[in-house]
Image (cartoon, rainbow, N blue to C red; front, side, top):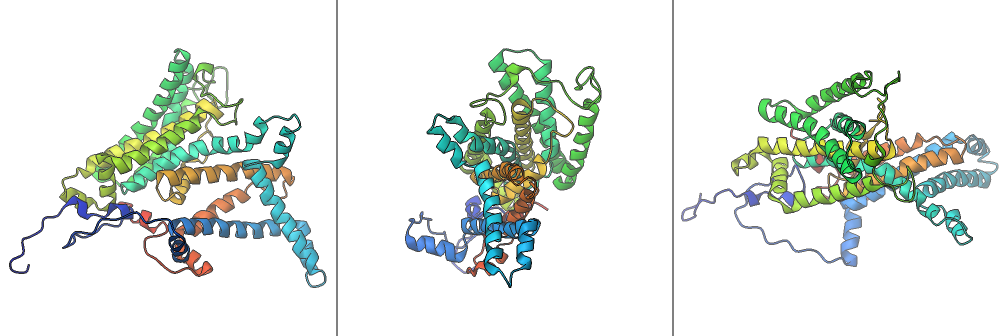
Length: 445
């Protein structure tokens, strides 16, 4: 220390949390100037594009994934393959067949998931106006559980934890919501609310248990959540195999009774897969998490712990308590995802009801960069891919399989996770702090 200079104490505000999780700063000798919001000008947009900002990297990753997916569609089309056999004699024909195959597949995906122009034309000639919004409705219905499980993973990311147990927490919420749905008699509106709250509580208990083990014993949350997934799968199998538990009476299959009609979440314009109140719950949850992380002391503590647990302890934050609370919230969000499914699109719980919501939630959280609004957009994208994949398989008579959707999802996440590859392909200037490496650094491993 130089003579005549007073020692400077460490302050919690010295940690630049706005930079994202996993980027702890060191106390600076001089206060940082106040940050001002940049004006959206042409120069700013050009800089964002040429330097490869997070949004630009994501858009280019999606574009590159669609290009690679188009190549796979071409190889799976026997007509195009034969056309390419005569490339040197009839190059125009080969290119035309290639374009027709790829454009038709992607246009069918768009029509199945976003908007079908034929329904718009039919509406002007006495057709149903509701049919225009059916593709978007189906997309939102598919996106609802993905958004909630994505939020479950994302909020744990922000606190430096890797929640792989969204699937097990989903099962916990589904069991409670299902039992309350058929085993308890309540007035209509109250019944719905109780089941939704029960789904949250069922998942929150599983998440709370993980947080307690992490805080009290130091058990790694990745190992604990993976093992709890299998525990919950086996528990669900047991409950659905005994009529005295959750199995439907006089039934040999692993299936629960239908929940009561007054416990179902309302749908807009008709029965599933029309979008319902569950989507509003998902959006409200995303807004609530965004407010929690950015506007509350608890959210600030989560972000501080995710940036640097040691610095958080130095500043007087109870790190262990933050781990317990964030895992409780993460489990509750996964349980909410289950409630929107068993009370909305699938009112009868089976052993396979949990599907791939847990792994897909991890993918959605990564693509959304662990930001609530990004998670909503990523969930809508994946919901559109799921709906569009089914539609294109039917439109092409199975020639383009719905599995192409899983390939596209994997490619998108792969490219988003490798920003250096995107910059190399599109010749962008390198910058620090983009891509998912910022999120990965926040994992408290």
